[in-house]
Image 1 (cartoon, one colour):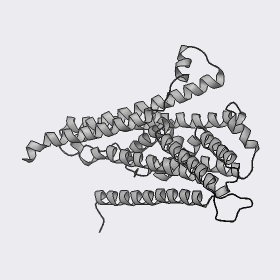
Image 2 (image 1 turned 180 degrees about the horizontal axis):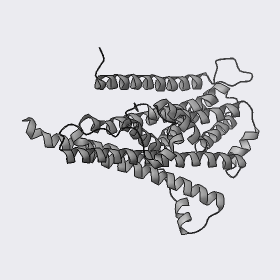
Image 3 (image 1 turned 90 degrees about the horizontal axis):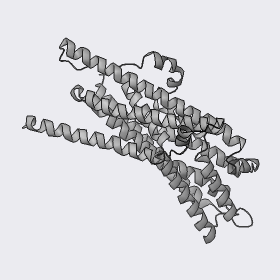
Image 4 (image 1 turned 30 degrees about the horizontal axis):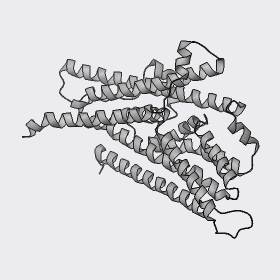
Length: 357
């Protein structure tokens, strides 16, 4: 017998949450194991570790984990995860693990960079330390362009979903049909059709791995962790490869934990309205409009700043873009969406309480 769609969806969400939880726990345990196994690599018996080396390694590990947590709330992360979650849900697809897969892709850049450093690729050191190097210029252009264009595409998809939902509700009201309004259906529209190759990259949460990987090419955090690895290896000169590899693993553990939590929360916040057609229009209008504004805003700042830096653009407008700090915006957006969700739930319960009595 075929299970009801709601039961199947809940079962799939539970499997996704369980899988994410186990994977994130595994990253934490692996990072700690590598850190504890770290040892001086020359002239010291295997399995021994001096107190001084341990203290330096622990401090670097905590810093790496903190950097991962902080980067999970960067505005481009939040905009990409939240907007993609809304798009997948609007197209009838699962979206619980969007944040998790995005963070894994982003962390892969940091891990690859650290492996190159620990493998003795010393030519990379100068390129990483010099923000004006050719490596920085190329990767920053690729990463920022992908980020900005992707955010525009996801914003367009959400606008189309919202327009289709509004049209469906208007037809329902005009025809006097008391049945639930139809869902937004597949993403469509001429502008989204032009961006179809980009949007087709993400049809399942797992495909967000590639998006996160491309976002990470900007080296905004890979540089921080790369310099952290260099600092740790310089201060504690004898730390083995296991101690250095613990840093990107712990970085990934911190970032994946909070990106996964953000993605899961947004999945249920966006999906809440789909359970009752009577409450979907005003709530979806509000949260989707917020999602679109954030995606367009972050994408615009990123692309405008990149253009100003690459082409030497001057003027009040370009100076304004260069001075924008998007750091706190990600956390503000998460808090705003969660607040809207909770307030709306309370309002719905308040309005329906007398009827229940």
